[in-house]
Length: 379
Image 1 (tube, rainbow, N blue to C red):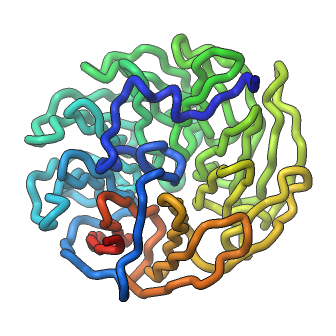
Image 2 (image 1 turned 135 degrees about the vertical axis):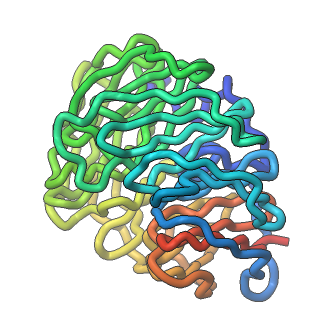
């Protein structure tokens, strides 16, 4: 039996209902969902649209409410009704960027604010009432675009990609452990390594695996990009870890079954993507490179095929959804082969770099200028 298991099983202590999308990249935190999607006839139907502040935050969905973060001087965390799009509440705090996606669990919503230092905020998810906030140490090197990693909730704690990894107690924000260093931009990923709960932080210059309980470093992979733009979430599967970036590096696969990671293959500058994360499904690895969405050969790392649609991807049941940077939605049947019979529709205008969210037949999309839309795509 593999020593490494999927990240999903380790989150069973945090219940997620089928209609919820409470974390960045979905209930499994990996861009995939088992929820069935039966496409409706005709183009996606716009149910509602509303305007929030600017930013590249995605949206999360829980108990009939949508949450997203924004830059600017006011309304930095906004809660909307998922059925109508009407604003329920908003909160204002200091932040330079609206790029970190909120996370929701147990009636609380958590958000990472990026300023001179990072500040974590926790609010009552229903009423928006502030519950606690916690200042963290500043990054030891400059963050050109601040912090964009989402909170990662596990058991009684929340992990943040600040410094070289931070764990706070979810109920009151008390520091459980904290490591100073060069902050990254990806979301922490929890998995099991050698039968111990482990959390991976893609920091500004390396991937660090830490014991999830005590924060001790287990191993690391050097990964130094210009400006520290390590923004793609690591993909961890079958005793392997896939890393992807741009800004001077590309993509690589490592064997992590031993004491230290062993590189299996790597492709350098211009062979990865700056911020679009991939996923693993049915023994195959999918991700983004300059040629578009691709399936990579696990033995060689070469693309088996590449398709130009999209800069973000979701796998909902047996449907592959990809959203382009200019707001074009592509939907196709999912298989290991190149997408065929692709349905394309322009659904939102202006720059759209974040990942959509899906729940109960509806796709929720937000652009960089702050327009949030709900589209019915499933019967």
